[in-house]
Length: 400
Image (cartoon, rainbow, N blue to C red; front, side, top):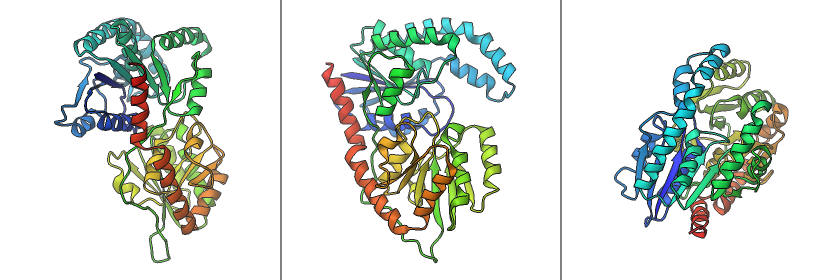
C-alpha cells in the first residue's frame, strides 16, 4: 500500500509535527511504500533527507512551486510596518485563488501517478497551511480511498466578517475527510467548538522514541554546578517564556535558565531585557536540531504556554530522559503531566505560582529524582512512538 505523509512549514522553529512524521515514517510497516511531501521551502527537508537517505521504503519529495504563504513570508520577513504588511496581503490575495486551482490539479495528478492509497496530512494548527488543506481536496478529487487530516494545535479565532466562510470551509473539509485526528482530548473539544466540526475528532497522542538505559537525575551538592531549568520551543508570546523568566525572582537557590529555540525577534529582545533584571542567569541557545546532548544536562524542563498549546512534545521528550516537568494548566499539557506525580501543573500566566513550584524542585534533588523516574514510567506507558504508530496503523487498517 502507498501512503503519503504531508507537512507544510516555512520558518525554522522547533516543530512537533516534524518529530511526529520522523517517528511515524521510520517505524511504519516496511511492507508499505511511504512518501513524504513537503512545501518547496520546508525548513526540515534536509533533515528528512538525512534521516531517510538510501531507505527505499521512504521517498521524499517537495512541491516544484512555492505556496502563497511562502511568497508572503519571503516578501514580508523584514517588514515591520503593519500598514505595508496589510497592503501586500491585499495585493497578492487575488492570486491565491488561481494558485489554489493550479495546485489542486497538480496534486491530483501527483497522487494518481504514485497510486497513493492513504493521505495523512499533518497540519500544525487550524486552518494552518494551505498545502495541508489542498491535499485533502486533491485526494478527494482523485478518489484516494483514505484521507486523514491530522491537526496538531488549537484553532484560531477568525474575525467576525469571515466567520461564515470559515464555517462553510470547515464543514466541507470535514465532509470529504475520511477522519480528522488530533493529539489531545482538549484539542479535540476545541476543534469541535472553534472549527465547527460536526463530530469530535479522533485522538491519537503523540509519541517519541526514547533513549535506552538512561535514568536522568542528579544529586546536586555544593560542589556540583547549579540546577539547570530549561525551556525548549518557539520563542513566541503564546509560549509564556516571559512568565518563566519573571518566575526566577521567586527561586531562592542558585539556578540557571536555558532557552532553546528561535522565534519572534521582537519578543526575543523583550526576553533579553527581562532576563537582565533577574538575579539568576538566562542563557539563549537558539535553534538546535539535535537535542540529546542538551537534555542530558537539564534538571527541570518547563513549558509555561498561555495559549495555543494542544499537547507539548517538549514534555514527553524531557520525560524520556527522566527529567521532571512543569507546565501550565492550558490545553492538552495537563493530559501529559500528572500534577505532583511527574512534575507540576500550575495556573497559566502566573509567575509567582510557577516560581514557587520551581523553587521546590531546585531545592530538592530527591523530589527531582522521584518525579523524573515517574515521568519516564508514564512516558513508556502512554507516549512512545510504537504506541503512536500502532494507533495510526490500526486507524488506517480499519478503513481498508
